[in-house]
Amino acid sequence: MRGSWAPGAIGLSLFLLLIGVGASAAYGQVVRGRLLDIDGTTAIGGAMMSLVDGGAQEFDRGLTRQSGLYQLVTELPGRYRVRADRIGYATTWSDYFEISAGDTIVVDVVARVEAISLAGIEAEGERRCRVRPEEGLAVTRLWDEARKALEAAAWTQDRGYYRYEMMGITREMDRENRRVISEDRSYDGGYRRAPYISLPAEELMEQGFARLTPVESIYWAPDAAVLLSDEFLDTHCFHVTRNERRAPGLIGLAFQPVRGRNLPEISGTLWIDPATAQLDWLDFTYRNLNLPEALMAGPIGGTVEFAALPNGTWIVDSWRIRMPRARTATNPLTGQTQSLLDGITVQGGDVLRVHGNEGTVLETDLGGRIAGAVFDSLRAGLPGARVYIEGTDIEVSTDRDGRFELARLEPGVYSVTFSAPYLDQYSFVPEPFEVEVVAEATTPAQINFAAPTMTRVIDNLCRHEERPEDTANLPGGGTLRNTGILIGQVTDTTGAAVAGVMVRVLSRDFDVGQDVSPTSVVTRTLRAGRSGVAARTNAAGFYRACWVPVDTRLRVSVVNPGEELDPARLQVGYNLTDLIELQEETVIIPSEVPLRTLDLRVRPR
Image (tube, rainbow, N blue to C red):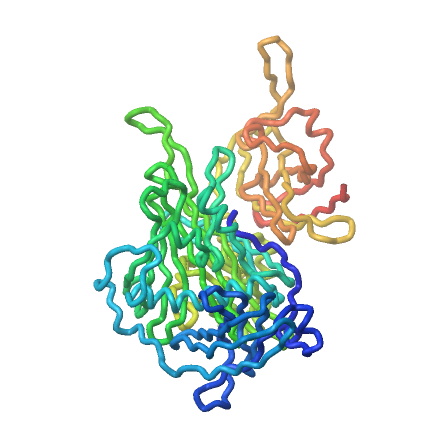
């Protein structure tokens, strides 16, 4: 696990903070006003206003609304001034003022127009990694801009203003973190402090960013509060970096643990847009995990993405943690057991929508997409087809024109296929196609499907099933020809489909022989080269049994839930007593038409 989606208390709105003067005494001394542009009339929203005393100690902070209004509170009378920080601009200070016990005063602040330029900063200029770098350095300029966004995110988290709709993601990837093997999604919503909350900074600095035991492996990512904390800043140093392949056009503020930190740690980079000075995202890797080298060969680490809301508040809107998935194998040279990298497990979440007092304040984009159409055999759009990604619960239905779009996909290679009602009854699954979703793509990846004709469906029903040899085992001789296909649907007494149950098909025309055990107990057993077939029903309750005997009576039954089905016994035979106890249907598949349908109904247990 990582940080949490832990619910937080419902916060008061910014509007409720701007209450009347009569209530100010309950809070202490109040400073309120507006942040204005240089013209003295245009309001500036989304700036962080801080109440600071002469010793540079901060007593309160808050973001300005779109109207430029702010309100700050202090419990101590005294001499203060207000600092205004907004991303991409130089800090503005008010003049000092005195505030007496119980006072509420108005301080309007006119913002400086001096823009901060990061475009000229070069990574080569400062290679030394610095802890709390002094003023005037390029690394300090970058940190000051990143700090503004982090402080806004931490402030938003502390107050829990918003109602979030979120999607949790668990993905199993291959070793290169490229091909999607499986993906599970979960959805959650409600008021909470923040979409993602990490462990407290002091706990992470004392115990590390990962906890690895023989029983469990737990990883954490930092949130804004951790990155701003004294504990983090005192144990990590910073330097300027660039990576045009990883973050084209951005400038990075890289950090790493100071020497002597032997706990599970992280190194990472805060990526900033030099044109706007806005913090874009953080990527990080884990260090000091004390894992086998083979497991650390994968892309172990994660990302945390930041987003500014229209009113100036900031949130973490997406996060991912990539963890190694291990398997054991025997070294052929030494005979010793070793750990190998089996793949990457990715866990994280996305914010889909953010709701405030003013309605929906953020609706995130659809992410990576796969779009296309499903056509029938006449090249007309096939409506109502189910298009899905194998190994996941991601699916959509085609519209009346046969078109579809799968959205909110991570970069990677996906196996995509489709189903339709006329295919479900045959348990026929078209061959999937691999489609790659590319990072930062502006248009969906495209794929079209051509639905097969009924002739092709029937001809290919059992294309992946090995066909057994015909066997001469009928009473009195003769060949038992295994060329039949039996399909059907299992429903309960209400007519509802029963998914995931086993259907067993056995021939009645077996040779009867004797097995003699070591204790000389004789067991009468049915003998056949292929004595039975087992098939599992799909999500719609349909089953398909391939290569069953034709021109002979077949016993067909649904295996009771919880009953163990032994594939080895299906190949050898069943005791006569077992067969007598079965509740079954009987059917004969003629060799002239070797496809037969048999629906089964079961009583719910």
